[in-house]
Length: 346
Image (cartoon, rainbow, N blue to C red; front, side, top):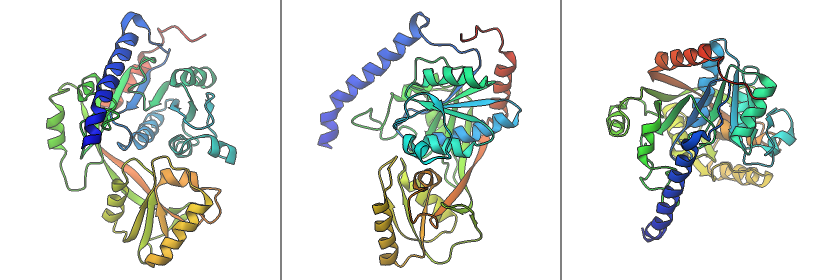
């Protein structure tokens, strides 16, 4: 508790800096406006709300409407120069974060993914090279430099405002009032058998106009890190491991799918796995008498190429989305069909 109290002054300064930065970009038309619609999938909390699966779902849905989609993400790895992500080589895997690789692999053959240090510069480069009909910005709600035509804000069902405190005392990037800027609110990870009505009522104090969407994580099957599907349920108990923002969501999805766990190892978010980690995990399998290892799709992209990972099971999931889906898709169509009057990027 005392650590949080000591960090409170820094949180106040952080909140002030974010507010001033946003106001500076909003004044005097300082934002970069692109000649195609730009849609942001973002949040107000650090990690754990499931932005990337929502971005994948939305990109697939817009692609299914017949539009060419460019997905833009920021990369914190070595590959900071804006460029197209091709997840087929080990060099690519070493240079990009797990979220960027997951986007590129999940959307392979459908949508193009570009990543770099600056979302704006990356979007411009991708626009010139690919000429898309629409651009999706993964984690773009706090990227004030780039004009967005739609802002989707993703909130976690159980803790829509994290622990209620700003960084560094808490997990919030902005004050809860920032939700008022959202064009659509997306409540993610709604627990099976539960209603999101309570969370919805809580959000009405901040934004009563934005249409809402709701999604549940749906278990779709198992596959291997080395390739190929696993048919049926695994025999015996498994030892789970992951390096994601909210690991309890992975545990819950496994348990809801009926998969028995002998134990679970939690690594830091965006963890870079090493051969030594696999030796340790194999030892845990022996100690707990589990029948094997299981992890998430996000972790799996970082495991490929590491010896001894081919037989690691991966849970595949999908989003079951309800709420204002038709309204959102119609809005996207209107934006795409209505463009053409903007100045192009030279």
